[in-house]
Length: 246
Image (cartoon, helix red, strand yellow):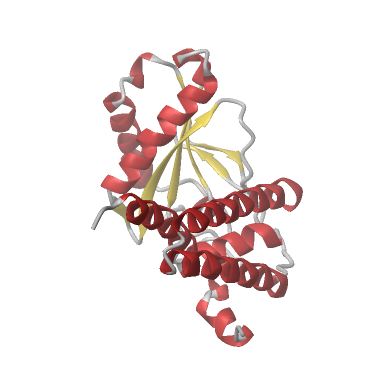
């Protein structure tokens, strides 16, 4: 049986609290991004664009989003650097382009660990016009806020966020047990089902109630506790063991 108090502490819920101010390591007093940070982020994005041969296409924007562009930043934050372009410029098969760019950004994020101050840089591609749920979006290309975050009082339902995270941790534990019992097909099937459930849960929460929704906070708790990584390990390790010959 889970110890609710221990789980609460382990998942580091303090990191989800809303801050009183933007992170002044990143932002000037007038809420403009510090020039040296902006220049470095733009250089990283443009190097990646050139590396992939995407410089021949029009880049709609390069933006900073996520918690560092809002009031919910913490020690777990990173620089969410989004490169926005029209995927249709590259190929009419939008899903193919999306899969290709996701694979490339995934490989880049795995291979590089660039830090600016206390935070790592994470690259993403975003299709022009694609919905993006974030309280703050800052255009590095044009040096202005596309969406400026508001410092408002937010009621965080931490109790239900933790309960939802706890339930998913139990399910991840079950998937891991199947793997340890060498029931690899069942482990993979169940773990993928949980992964899809978490993805849909988070997306639903973001669309309906934003970044402070119970569903999104539960996802953040699972990621910060390492349980998302553990779930992915079940899928990958089960497949590797299933395909191996002693």
